[in-house]
Image 1 (cartoon, helix red, strand yellow):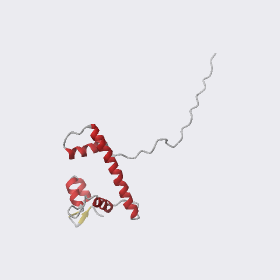
Image 2: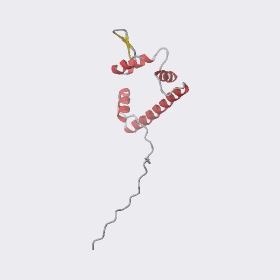
Image 3: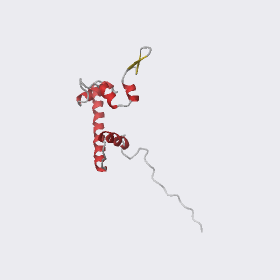
Length: 129
């Protein structure tokens, strides 16, 4: 006759994830768009993969350096001055090429408004520090 079916026991999962924590990545489309903007010619897939790896490594090193500068200053927050020091060490910011000029040359207007202080009516400076 009829036998009762016994449910199979499934081992319980551990609540902790067994996967490695995933580091945030820069979207491939953004890297591709920036690279194509400056190269202005077709790029093979193999070359783009190398560019992608190099940019990931560059931004990882950049963030580690910024973290070290903030830690050295006894802070837990990276400030704009840390970025300016890093860009000076890389040779991007010099006495002849200040940070504001780089911002004006390479960033769109909406970002320039956020980063460069501008006096408006009523002697208000935007963005305020």
